[in-house]
Length: 248
Image 1 (cartoon, rainbow, N blue to C red):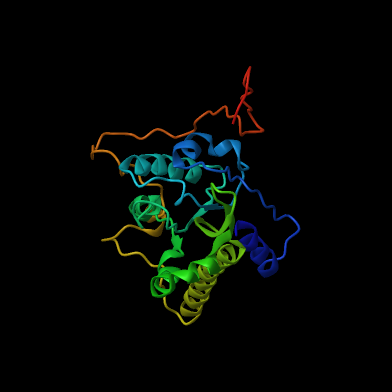
Image 2: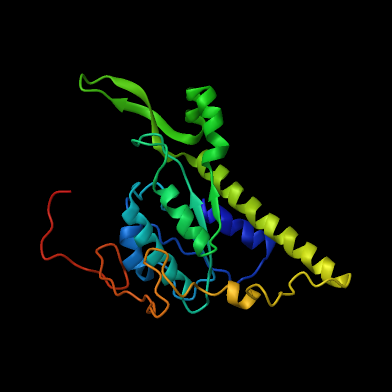
């Protein structure tokens, strides 16, 4: 789904210098990427699509890790735009997943969230067999050696990925429409970007918050830049090579 968004950008704004990088690591959430994001994406990224809602557990600790991740990404040299793509799974103890832990933090850092949940769940609630349209399905071997049809309601299938990428592209299209509308207002003599002295200027409002959301307010506290160093067995930049490995 990330690649489909990139392909749309390339069609919309053709440029031979556009580059795509997939920094995804299976079964890894914010607790890993908060420290190791720099091992998997280029430092000069301009747009980063984050998708961790399924691998992040529904626990308050996720918010702290997710906040560290966002602060780290936002301080990269090109000050990249971030979009959080939130999926849904039906195998957990709650329909609410780590994605719901992300939302408050994302809002605090002005990171848009594009979620598939409200689009597909009403269809599934009406007819649970509809889940086969969006999730991986196939035959699963039973203990007696027979096979039974199985729907893996944790992982979206290619169609589900396309739905998610379409939602993300629609978000970008809506932002482009808003930009055109603002330009038109300025051509007509209006100043939609004019700031009142009583409210934050655009420059101030778009800065990274100087205080942590997951910390007590302290007017004198200074949050240092978050630039972690990571050595990981899943990394090519600074690979951590075990002396011995066996089993899984």
